[in-house]
Image (cartoon, rainbow, N blue to C red; front, side):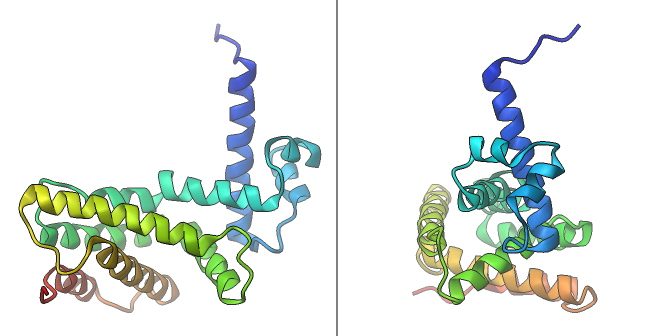
Length: 204
């Protein structure tokens, strides 16, 4: 006989279910087109139950972005580029292969759909979540971690850690969007060569 969940555990379970339902519906129909009622219905709850966990829709979007950052493909890719046992070139080579695999297996689709919609919101001047600042803080932190790995390995990065992360992320996003749009474009060896070239950029 299983032990009944505590009140806090039940609340967390409900919150997690709402975030995962929102992720599914946002990816399928878009953030703007998905209502709180639809999210509640997806998990058999009322709109009031959603608002008991999230102040508003933007708070729910933030929770979805955190989920994507920590549990989905993005987390796996970030961990790979910080592996202190491998050279920067080898980390970039492995990253390219992991990215290709995740795209092929469908692990990047939801992330990319929501990512693209969020960046369109920024470009249109509607950035209620402060995503530009969020990205800057995240990239700066990841850049510092990359610099720490380089110092440990006694390697010199081609540029500052933060700038390297911006370039790495931009290249990863471009490859992902193109391969999702046209799966036979950008051969694997070309993608791998691009990331290896990033690792071997001429240093200052």
